[in-house]
Length: 574
Image (cartoon, rainbow, N blue to C red; front, top):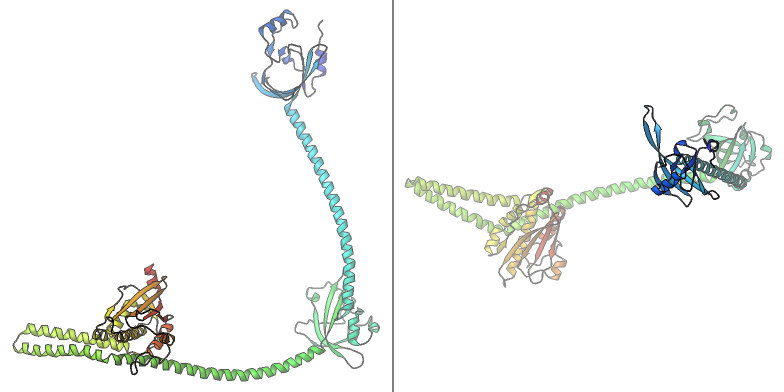
């Protein structure tokens, strides 16, 4: 028996999904799409195709497989299937489009058939997005409603708290007004007394109830205006909109009318209070009686203090004048002491100077006599040679005299860039005669590129003093060969350390304690004034340096001088 299924197929067409009726061999014998009829869901073997053809079930229809590209199992009864659909284009050519379906199968057990529903995935996705939007919208609405309910509840709670706080603040302000020590009076729009606190009644000494409704002038009489006071007209009515200037405080000093004749000096402050529909005024009164008394006492004390300050200033100016005079005298004395020390050194060196000048003078006399003899013999070459020798010896004597002349020069400490090598060489040249006379071996540094911030003449004087002391020290120690050395070291590229060391007996503990005290000397009586080291210390400190003795055990004395390295020399070292 064969049944026509077209009415059944038309009934399920245009439902938004496709359906298939499958026989036991998975052959489509009913579908919402005619092009899927007599197609198979799976590949059939030759035997199966021959059996179906012999049964005459589908007449002479050729059974081919549906254009299925991909099958993906979703669960036991559901799977995802991609079809390749042929569609006719505008140019009458076939184009293929891939379509995805969600396939759900249910068996018809009595007949052994299966019915399959195919829902397009695009439609399912649209419904999913739609339901997602509906769910999210619902959640959003619920959240908004919950938030609104929470805010309303919070608003009601805050309103209740605000009302409670308002009542509390009103009671608090009322208590403050009633218990404040300042007198308070409120005025209405026309500046008539409206209310007051107990402090103002205590201030005037009587009740203010009779003053209710009266002008402020009936209670307070203005005396003078303060520096920042504005014009206050008691007759003026503020009907117009107030300006910013009119809202400022008004402060005046005046008389508060008290009981009897005991009026009090008070400070009055008028402040406008802007209310929603009108304006009122708050007036504050402060008792000025004690303040006036304090001001009078302060004025008197200030006058007395100014007189004392003038007297003390005059005394201080006089003391400063005397102090400046003493400082000037001290500087002059110090300069004279330094010059005296220089001259004392020159006095000690006088024998050496005489020796240094006597030798070239003797040689000049000899060369002069020889020149006269050679001139008489008409030996002009020998005469020229002798005259050249005389000229050389004259320049040498000039250098000796100039060296001691510069050393003996007076002057202030003028700091600048000083070549340490030249300063050491100049000091050694000045002391050369004594060093040679005492057969002392002198070691000098070879470094020539170091410059210090100092005064050339005063630095020479310090080095001469140290060399002079070192010569005296090595002469006292006959047990060793006399040696004096001068070493130079750079400390952290910022300072220069000059060490003057001798082979003498060293310094005693007592000498170390009094080393730089004026007029202290460890030399025998009649040798030295005891001013050399004291003056050297003042000179070095004036050049922002320091001088000290380094302790050595049985190795003689070592004096150290630290000076600032000159910045240009520092850059060259770096």
